[in-house]
Amino acid sequence: MVSPEELEIAPGFEKSNLQGSVFETATEAELLDVLEKAFDYRGDVTIKRKDGSEISGYIFDRRIEDTLAASVVRLFPAGVNQKLSIPCSDIAGLAFTGRDTAAGKSFEAWVKKYWEKKAAGEKDIELVPESLD
Image (cartoon, rainbow, N blue to C red; front, side):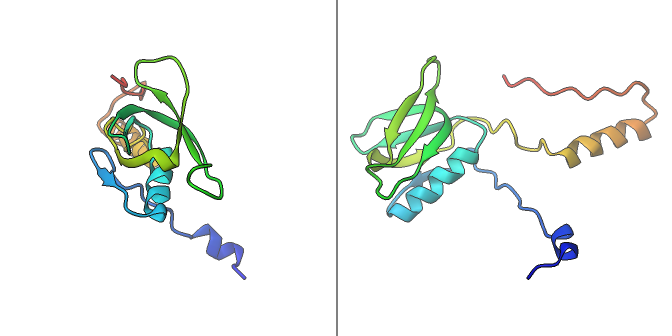
């Protein structure tokens, strides 16, 4: 049994920098692992289908079932205002092609910037988000 004290000091996890990574899947387990990473990624990905076609967009949902044929990823294709479902059994590979908009955006990073500005003597400190473009 884990005590509450141990939970308070449990280490967090570090997000790996996936931007620019390309994965060609060989097994079902590898594909499911990459799709889970793609779901957590806050940027566009490019899915390579087994028929050779490619689709780029933002994965907003995945539905993992008992088989790959029944499992799907759902994405917003880049530049199109619609949702698309792709069976996992049709996916041959995946590339993290878009910028991860959440990279480096932790609360700790925000606090560090705040204290740096305060130490420099700035007044009325306002930290605003950077542009996504």
